[in-house]
Image (cartoon, rainbow, N blue to C red; front, side, top):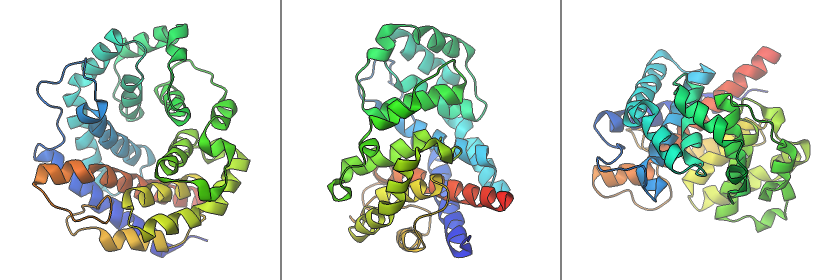
Length: 309
């Protein structure tokens, strides 16, 4: 049964977070530093935040469950982020010079989902995929899923063994649920995100893993809500929307709504929100992104359930 209270809360929370991101980018926050070169070592401080905003905006456009104002804001965010990447040229140049790195592909996937294409980059990615070295890169198992999903989204020829990739993750082992910690909590969420393509393919999560998540997701959600880890709480709510029938109720949504600021900012944790506007944006941008995604995929799941019924 669809809980209209949850849907209303999800819509308001996601819409306000999107408005906060849109206002920040309109005012010049979240830009790639002017001196950024393709050889940067720290992706997190170069363009990962920009890619995360593009992810959220691309899902809003993909699912089509938001109102006209949010849809327009999502498109404007994507246009601005794409321009920051020189319409894909920055990603192309980085991939060309660092052919085993996966971040250009992972970032590009968010834009390709929304119709922004760079044919030379796609040709390069297709060529590099034939190299043994490209598949030998040692990355975390859930990140390997992210690369596979990016290739799927872009439409590159690729036929991974999804079940084998899933089994190699922390979640695939279905460890004792009390062994989860902050880091493996994020491993769990991203495994679900990539296997289901952010809720579009709920059946992509193997049934034993789905049953395990459904059993323990409410417990994990309560634990992280109790200590105010709002970024992870929001990610767990995305998971709940990705696995089909929801396993949690109103509590997580109500807790997030209670801590969201009037302007849409959503704190990452229970620490005070302070510093100048740029510092505040950098500290809490990711939580806003996750809130947008959580609201979007929750509404999209409801729409699919209504259509199926």
